[in-house]
Length: 192
Image 1 (tube, rainbow, N blue to C red):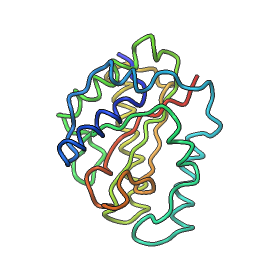
Image 2 (cartoon, one colour):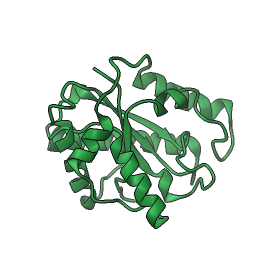
Image 3 (tube, rainbow, N blue to C red):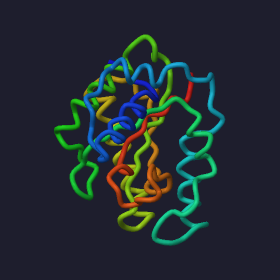
Image 4 (spheres, one colour):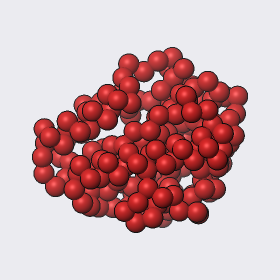
């Protein structure tokens, strides 16, 4: 019941290229494990560094939409990770019941021996609708909700997961800032 990395991103991306819409594909534990395993030993930045950088990014580049990428984005993109759609009630961090199956598959992957001992950032993202600081706070609450569900409902050890909200500061599709593809949760393997 453990989960880990980047293959899910490829699965979701391939589903997007086929359907043209952001629809959750049927996840498998093995796809998630394959995406997340094989991380480096240690990442040189923390979840606090990411949160601070996202907040400073809003101050440094004010406006309705993020126009610049986060300085740590290139380093994040090099890590083993995957993206998954977790649905929430509107303007809320309450996970919708239909997403618990997805979170359960993630937990199942995290509990496999291939990912045991690895630590992960649970990263929440929003689209660009609304105020950027508000989106940053909402994404943090949503990342925490997913982390809490993994810990309390699915018994993933709490010390292996850290929630980070990036709001709209790292859009998956900057050409469509309000698009559903930008509303996602990432699991990023940050090593051991």
